[in-house]
Each structure stands twice: as C-alpha cells, then as structure tokens.
Length: 264
Ligand SMILES: C[S@@+](CC[C@H](N)C(=O)[O-])C[C@H]1O[C@@H](n2cnc3c(N)ncnc32)[C@H](O)[C@@H]1O
Image 1 (cartoon, rainbow, N blue to C red):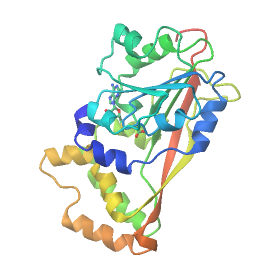
Image 2: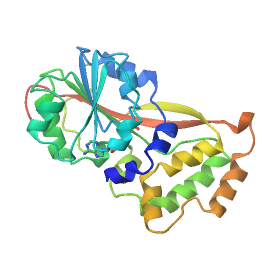
Image 3: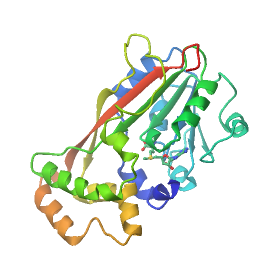
C-alpha cells in the first residue's frame, strides 16, 4: 500500500489540503497536557506542522520514506520511518515508552491500518486515563454547482480502482471501529464535522487527482483516469474565474476519544 503513495509523493505534498485551525483547537481543548504527539501516517507532514505550533514535540511516523522526504523540517518535529507491522521494541525505540504520549493523531490514514493491532499500540502508549486519539478523514471536495456533478461522475467511475478500505472514508468514518471513551464535554466519539479549504487552479486540481492511490492503481492496470475526454469535461466545467483559481472545500470528519482507565 505504501507504494501507492510513494510514486506520487511530490504531487501529494503540493496539492493535498492542510487542515483547519478549528480542528486543531478542538483537539487541543480536549487534551489536558500539550507535551508529546504521535502523528501516525504523517505523510508529508500535513497535520504535523500545525500540531507543532500547539504541542511541545511531535513525532511523525510513516511507512513511506518518499513521503517523509517532502515533510517540513521543524525544530520540534522528529520524523521516523517505521515498518507496516511495528513491533513493541520499534515502538519503544522510535516513538516512546508505555504511557508516554498525550495525543495520537491520524490524518487521512486510519483506514489503511490494521485496526486491532494499531489500537493496542495506541492504548499502550497513551497516558492513562486522559491520553487522546484523534483520527480524521476528508471526503471528496466541493467546488461549485457547475463542476461538482462532473466531478461526482468521475469519482464514481474511479470506484473500481480504490481499495475496499476507501469505503470507510466514503462513509465519513461513521463505520470505522473506534474503541475509545468520549472526551470530556462530549457524549460520543464523533464524527465531528469540520471544513478544509484550498485555492486551486485546474492544473493543481488535476495534480491532486494524480496523488490519489486509485489514480496510481488505475495506471498500473493500464488505465489513464485523466484521459483527454475527462480533461475536456473538467476544463469546460471549471470555467474562468480569477486566475482560474477556485475555492476547493473538503469536508473533514473527526473521531476523537480518550483511552480511559480500562483496556477494551
Ligand atoms: C493518505 S496519506 C495521509 C498523509 C497525511 N497524514 C495527510 O493528512 O495528508 C496516508 C499515509 O499513511 C501512510 N501509511 C499507510 N500505512 C501505514 C502504516 N501501517 N503505518 C504508518 N503509515 C502508514 C502512507 O504511506 C501515507 O503517507
């Protein structure tokens, strides 16, 4: 799977959205101590950079060396390449000891993980009882009434090339297993909805599509998702606008919980 992100790491770092400040403020308000964060599947640091302005230190881990190469260099962020099935000793060596982490974040990556194994690691490494896990995904972007139907048709035609786990994203993380207690002040673990925005011209938007794992999978099967016909339809629907740039809005869905005292 990591290979799917390896081949388009540069496109990924250039065109993927960052996340809204409100999301980080909400997470920070639910984390009693702002010392150490483990950002798992950090990619090119889309969340790590924002977390670094709130928490004393951030450890960003990923299984793709190429993704990490595009992550921003920040004084309080340490990036680590990890194996897909991380062992307890690797966890201790690269991330931390038992009950040492205040917050685990997973941005647009939880659906790729082996959930039982990952949650055992999270429960072991989070401080008890108040350590928090926050995992979020974003679904397909919205642009305007003219472009959205064309894009929706394209997305639905791309379905055969998405991994089955993409279904968890399409379902806005409502169905993802999440065995944690609600954080203080909440009576459920989400999803809580936020919005991320990015100004993009059509070229950038097409580069964003090229950063999809599905685009890479289709290509490996000899299918060019962005064929001339599709580019033509996109160009017509995109239209002009100031410098051809449009506000692209991604709905973000957050699951958040605390580890509590007992292991479930
Ligand atoms: C869709 S990207 C998300 C990157 C970034 N967090 C963001 O918000 O854009 C998913 C990332 O998860 C990484 N990944 C996949 N499986 C992983 C695993 N088992 N452990 C750590 N990282 C993993 C991939 O290499 C990729 O960089």
